[in-house]
Image 1 (tube, rainbow, N blue to C red):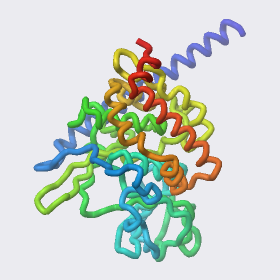
Image 2 (cartoon, one colour; image 1 turned 90 degrees about the vertical axis):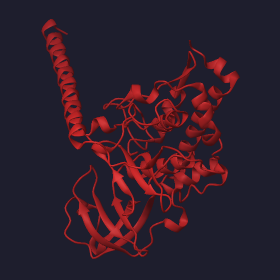
Image 3 (cartoon, rainbow, N blue to C red; image 1 turned 90 degrees about the horizontal axis):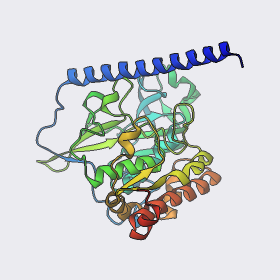
Image 4 (cartoon, rainbow, N blue to C red; image 1 turned 30 degrees about the vertical axis):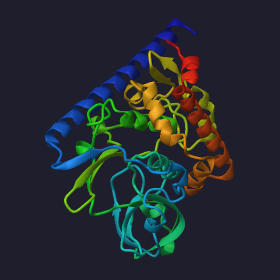
Length: 354
């Protein structure tokens, strides 16, 4: 290759780096402006929580997950409206019980359906989400993006139904939260949520600082008694999960082979009491930094009690094929075993790197 060609390549790479850095600076500036303009969150007299005791983990129903069987969507469904925002087609419907649901299609559906079940089973707040394999929506109005997902007569397949409870105050985007600015920094509960995120290879861990591109965190304010309200901190978009973590070129979602290939690099060691991970994502440092052995040990009290049957049930409910189910279950169990090894004194000494 000639010197001139190498010079062109170097200029092209340099130009691409400048563009990427420039975009990141621009997005951060826009995000900072939007958050400042939005002002304080409307949170008064509430208890802040990111986790609650899940109870007897091996007895949890991971087929139905958050909300249980009684709060699953029930046909017939009646069309309310279509939504223009978001990366995937989405409409709102009302079911036979009068509950309102946001219905979404696309490649993120199985990822999100599984992720909420896993997070919920470990004690984290998660939206009531179900995969409905086939059904129909009555009285469908004019459609734009969703026209390719809803056939004649309102028929649809493979849709994610997410409960939209009007009694819950939902704080998104500018009023969401960031991994570095929340009431739980330094706690095992927040560290555990980061580990769950990395466990399922969710590379899309954007937060309040990324509102220019869309935050994937939120705060749901729920009334837990007549006089008490609770601000629940949660992840509301798990769509970058169950594939490869990595850069925009290498990452993926719902890819059992890619997920398995990276499993040996999930936990890479322990340095000075902090667990090291192979994960990379949108905010790599925020996800994998400052995870202590004690944090992993705390999480394993819950995550480690999930059975393979529960993992398989959650994967079935998410639309996994038998082959995907077997592969994902094996990889998840291997990753959980890595965490359990770190949590034990013997495992910590074997994996220590510094």
